[in-house]
Amino acid sequence: MPADTSDHAEPPRQRGAYAKGIARRQEILDRAIEVFAERGADRTSLRAIAREVGVTHAALTHYFGSLEELLVAVYQESTAPERQPSSPADDATPVEMMIESARINRAIPGLVQLYSTLVATALEEGHPAARTFATDRFTRLRGRLADIVREQQADGRIRKDIDPDAVAALVVAASDGLQTQWLLDGTAPQHEALALLDRLLRPES
Image 1 (cartoon, rainbow, N blue to C red):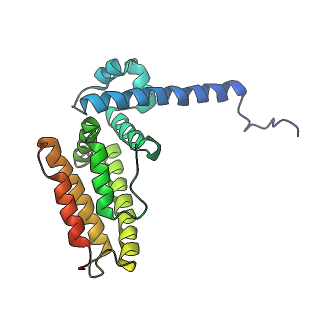
Image 2 (image 1 turned 180 degrees about the vertical axis):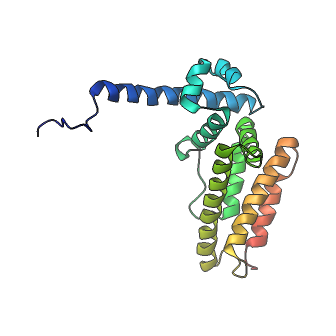
Image 3 (image 1 turned 135 degrees about the horizontal axis):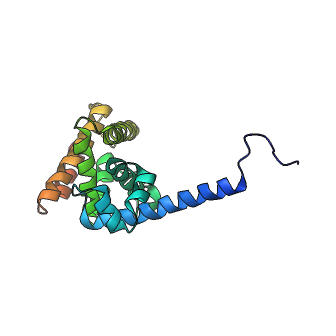
C-alpha cells in the first residue's frame, strides 16, 4: 500500500511530540493525585501546586489551563475504574455500592475533600469546569443507579412501591451528605446510616 501523502497525513515528528505530550501530562497527573491524596484540596494557587508536583508553573498551565481544570482532571483520573482497589459485587444494591465506595474513600481523605471542594465550587458563578463536572457526574450516577433499582425491583430485591429515580437521587444525597459529615467528624456513623437506608429500601420479608 502506498504511503499516505495527503494533507491529512501527520508527520512522524508531530506524532512523536503528541505522544510525548500525552505521556508528560499523565506523569504530572499521577504526581498531582499523590499530592492531593496527601494534602486535600485546600484553596491554593496553581503555582504552589506546581512546586509540590515538581513541575514549572508554565508546564501545569500548558496541560491544564487553570486550577479548576486541574482539580477536575485529578478527581476523574483518581476515580477511574482501573485505579480502584476493588469493585462492588455485580449484584450489589445501590446503597451497597455506596458503602463500598465509602470504605475505599476512608483511605484517601484528601481526594474525598477534593471532590467536596469541586461540588461546592460548582455552585458558584464563574466556574464552568466544576459545574459541568458536577452536573454530568450527578446525572450519570443517578441514571446508572436508577437502572439498577429497576432491575432489582423486578428481581424482588428492592421495594416495588418506590420511584427508581427518586431512590437514585436519595442514595446519592445520603452518600455525599454522610461523606461530608465524616470529613468533619470521623465518628459520624457513615456506614451504619447507609446500612439502615439499604434495609429500608428492601421489601418486607
